[in-house]
Length: 367
Image (cartoon, rainbow, N blue to C red; front, side, top):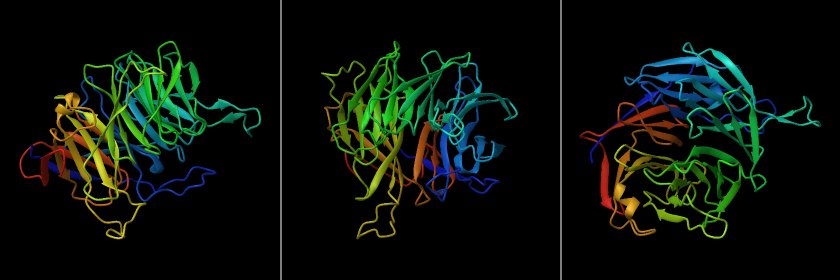
């Protein structure tokens, strides 16, 4: 299916900030999460973490910037069922609610009590943000503490420790089974928190696969997730138990040997969209820069009924992104029906419209 990609550069008004005491420098770019108001909003909303900015992007590409506190590091972003916008301030250990003018009108401290810490608190580094099945309860991943947190409407915070120490949970989404599902980037596992608070953990068959994003399968209790390093999209059944859990992995065709995956999303027709990009930390003899093109990948909905691990009869379309070295991050089908995505490294937001003249390559199961 042909399509056209348009990219919109984001002219952040501030220079990147670096968290106090952080052991890492700000990356070249810092364009992270993307969302929209599913109850009627026409704009996309994006977080520029190291610029301390929340950005509203119109369908035309016009942008409005809303500054967050200096050094706060906005990352996760979601609208709740009452159409209110929430943002995690990862470096500050807070979740805030923004009013219609982009001003903070509520702040929730999601740090942990820590008697030995200088201020008596330990920052969980709230990274990913998701909504519970009720559309109102907030869930977040404590990236640095190996925890997942729940925030009820009255502001009560409940913390659920994951089973693997140092697991680095980064993404959380509600499943159609009523549970919350979490990717453990370093723990190499998918975690599930049931409605009764039971925490389960399911190891991914491939070692060091680095799971990134996870989304529910349409009309099913199963979940799909990306394996960054494994270059796979994988399915985990919703009824997994500690003794019976078969994760099905599908190896995506690679445009070159050093590509990795970012996020994924289903569209309204149940096709699966994935970001595949050149790993800038992994040069090869053939690509020492490392050079090469990045792609938005459309996997036909027939993957939902394909034989386990077999993409040979599943049409796959590759849409080449005009910019290279994008460091893809997140992807979503927007309110206009187009596919929108963030480029962390190049500080751009992209829009893929399904119409003629894109640079594409479609084949069953390979390119």
